[in-house]
Amino acid sequence: MSDSTKNSKPKSDRAYEKKRRNCLMCSSEFVSSWPGERVCQSCKSTSAWREGIAA
Image (tube, rainbow, N blue to C red):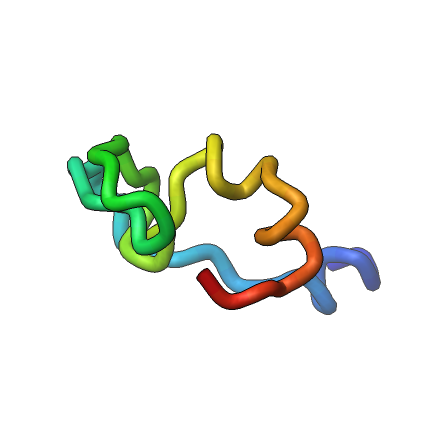
């Protein structure tokens, strides 16, 4: 086993299902790729999101 394999992050056994969610910033519906994704790509591309400004 190589060093990089021993130190890699374990892979989840669970396959995440894509799900329709409402964005926490703009409330528009979007398809979330995993349970922790709660902000749409449009809002993530704004300067407010990048700078950590609360909505």
